[in-house]
Length: 238
Length: 238
Image 1: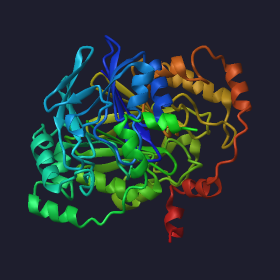
Image 2: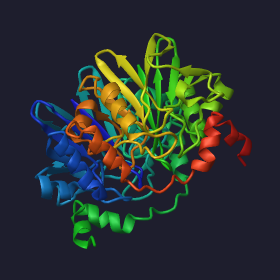
Image 3: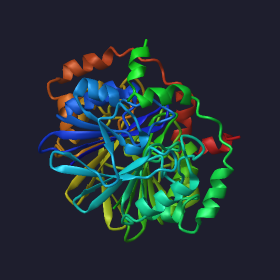
Image 4: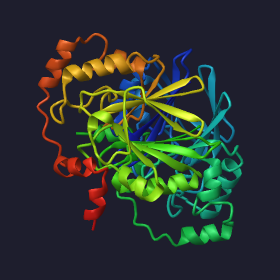
């Protein structure tokens, strides 16, 4: 199995490539518009053909590269059915499986940061990986104060869909602002300051209601661009 | 085996933690002074005891955290014997093995970017990893125009010490400025624009002689600090 994590330095966004060496088929999770050239070069050098581009949610802090991956490589765009994004080729439902070569990844809807959030679970050999987007971050989680966010919903998503995975499951988030790249279910259950197992739902809601965060800088440009799979960004690019 | 790669966003430096879960013993490679708190918190949460802190070379672009790791955690500092750094607890020679718990990592001297460069080779199960510092970067290599750098020496180091490892060996570099995190020996042999197998030593020397790079911004502060294992940085910290 080919696996790569990639960093967007400006927004601390993580992009992931998973590939099946035997067929050469691959998927990408959360590509960033500005990094499409980098990512396509890597896919080419690794001999991979992109079948799907998955967005964990409608991002508010950067523009997705999924539209470009479809336009240039023919990859199908995949988003949560809750995103109600007309440009998506596949409106993924809970439990839906995306096949690439002999491999597969399972979609779990994990709303709460936004209504459109989904996580993806991947099993290979004896290892489980979960790509959590902004639902669960390393020692944190996504904010719940816009895009139909809900702290109560996020609490249930994390506890029911992510913390029920095996303790050794590797957690690959959508961002990390301190330079961490990966965690595990066991670690977050023990050490996540907002979501460790000692914290009940009411306490979590209280934490999230009092974050007093500034509005994301790029939200006005990002949301309409991402509702169109990032294709507006190309039209307005210099 | 516990393995973590960590990013310093400001300098795009990568730090690595390798740990033995059975004994709890661990090593760190290229800690960054400003990230010592983050790294110690992670070690604590993972239940790891740091035995050694290894610097791949005397860095010119950031200050090492190795001195702090020794002062606060008792870790032994390890540098190449060619670095001639008085503060190092272990002046590692070519082929020297560093033990931590039931695991071990092998030092290979790989001068050329600087005279003090070393790489570390780690075998676990059927996987080989090499931590190359700035000797070999992803699709690149370290410059060779200061700190006793030599393009001819670097060419020999990469070809004799790194490209002789199995093709599937994962390469973990000291930096990447485009957001890539890992490569393989096969990839670099095929796609490194300076060091792929089609490029002979004379051509490589010609490439390196014509880079015309600006001098590193932090070299005046970094070199004396790193010759003292970073301990000067603490003394001058606000």
